[in-house]
Amino acid sequence: REAIGEIAAQGDVVIVAHAASLALAGSPGVLRVLVTASPATRAQRLRIDGSIPSEDDAAAAIRDSDRERLDYLRRFYNLK
Image (tube, rainbow, N blue to C red; front, side, top):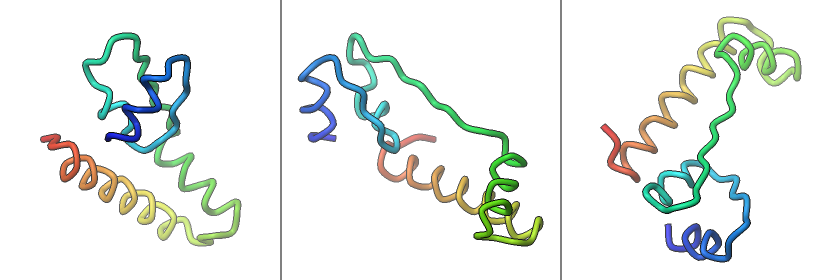
């Protein structure tokens, strides 16, 4: 959080980091943007790039990733 705050204080910056906007919540002049595709599109991309060939396995990988991301946000940012 401290590093994110220091960078943001420089002004006119773009911070691309997992949950960085949460560390800056309540700060004036912050634009929070989340860009994500649907779970189906994300799973399809895993299959296309060859990292996970099975449709079921790709869908499970997306579910696991989303669950892990939610757990991270809950633990480090006290989100309910």
